[in-house]
Image 1 (cartoon, rainbow, N blue to C red):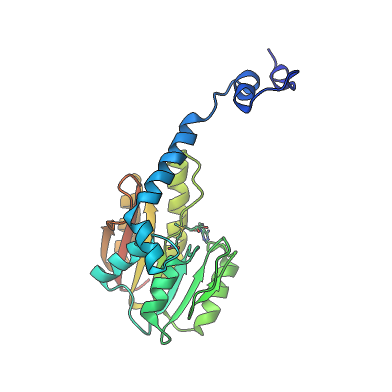
Image 2: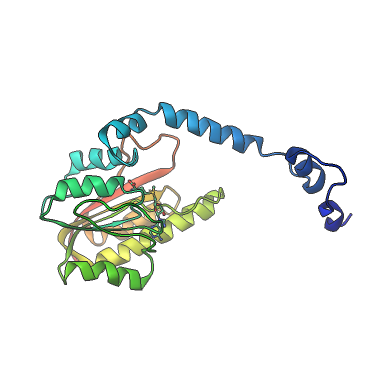
Length: 237
Ligand SMILES: C[S@@+](CC[C@H](N)C(=O)[O-])C[C@H]1O[C@@H](n2cnc3c(N)ncnc32)[C@H](O)[C@@H]1O
């Protein structure tokens, strides 16, 4: 039977569910509905979501960076910092609070997001494009960067290996940028979807940074395959 037959409009009014089954032979996405409901329930009970509301952070992700900062002192007042994948701006809030008026923070995202005090924000900006990286650098007046942070995540397709590859492309574009513009002893913090390629990335980092570690903050959801890699003591490119 041809596809055209299946795509013919229904003679009688039908519910969306019936339509999907009859005309496209696809069952209604019950799993998706229940998993987004589960996500919502989990999200609304999540202690970090509640805390972010009282602490005035734009997202629970603020606590991932706060925890890592507490343990590893990645940022210090006076630093030049580049942040990739910043929307809605929770990390930007944290970084800007640490830097105060002394440091310089440039934060970009593909999406638009609200301004953050003492930060230069570049919304609607794809970090991977060379012109956008030049725009970021123009705010540092030829000074080197002390810390490059990326919480970028690709749009999830649901295909694990495609998503892992897309995440890897993002982290390599951050690494390439960092290698050219990081100050001696500077740091790199990137989010990555854990995959069989993680070790390759870690080995590449070890060529340029003296300390390289996988870090998974407590506030990163256990079921998530995201990991953070912290590379410090940049030696040379
Ligand atoms: C998990 S969110 C970041 C959350 C942020 N750290 C915070 O605390 O509010 C990941 C972000 O990466 C951004 N992103 C993905 N690819 C990007 C790209 N090529 N350039 C810039 N941002 C990108 C997405 O738009 C998304 O907003």
